[in-house]
Length: 269
Ligand SMILES: NC(=O)C1=CN([C@@H]2O[C@H](COP(=O)(O)OP(=O)(O)OC[C@H]3O[C@@H](n4cnc5c(N)ncnc54)[C@H](O)[C@@H]3O)[C@@H](O)[C@H]2O)C=CC1
Ligand SMILES: O=C(O)[C@@H]1CCC=N1
Picture 1 (cartoon, helix red, strand yellow):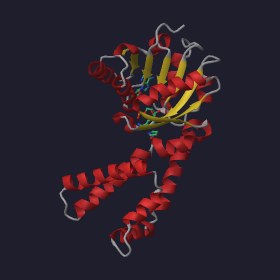
Picture 2 (spheres, helix red, strand yellow; picture 1 turned 90 degrees about the horizontal axis):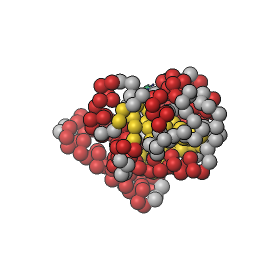
Picture 3 (cartoon, helix red, strand yellow; picture 1 turned 45 degrees about the horizontal axis):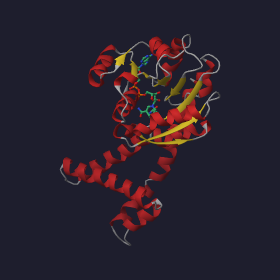
Picture 4 (cartoon, helix red, strand yellow; picture 1 turned 90 degrees about the vertical axis):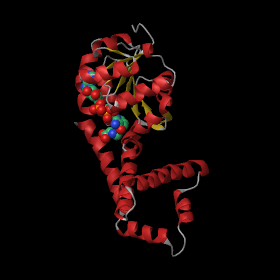
């Protein structure tokens, strides 16, 4: 039986810390949270920074009602083997690992444990995260609501059928990296044209933030917004023609399909 209403975050790397800090910002007390972390130095750093207890995986699985698994997909089998002997069907498992199915996790835990699969993203660190959640075989509404409560601390949450999770991973899970890639390229272009790096950086970052806000607040289709920037015979038309000539749109389609395929392959590994 779980003894408290604690949430344990198992694996406190980039995404584990993002969730931990988000829960604390959203008003959870450090005593309600536990973390586990294989790297001792990292564990000490997080305990000092956030005032949360660091425990072993077995202790976390014995104590917490909700276990949030945030290790790399490759580390998941070992972690599941470690917690399986102590976990009870009254506990809820929430997995943030790319490519790992609820069926895989269920098959390695005692019969009846509710598993929720989540794909978050790193803008959660500034409360602008996008998370998609899917139910496992033993989940009811209360488990989904519980997972939504955790993820809503750091941004938006939607529910998707699990078969869509590989595509979700490729779009919003990896998505911030594509945007940062574009930002890097735009800053580099500014520097090539002689702008100071700091000027180029400020211009690009605010342009990305402003464009995102315009999309969100107007609800307009991106094509409409792009057409508004594109004066006939003007500068934008010249640039967009180059993007089309370099098949940038096709490159995005291929890149995102590669991410989707990699998510599928992680499950097989
Ligand atoms: N970084 C991202 O943007 C996103 C990551 N994810 C998923 O989140 C998971 C974690 O990713 P990151 O945080 O980026 O990786 P990371 O490598 O930064 O963090 C994983 C942490 O788990 C620890 N760890 C590994 N095995 C452990 C064990 N048995 N017990 C305790 N701690 C253990 C590692 O020492 C490390 O600190 C992955 O499954 C990934 O697919 C999902 C969406 C976005
Ligand atoms: O690159 C990865 O595998 C993880 C999943 C989504 C974002 N980062």
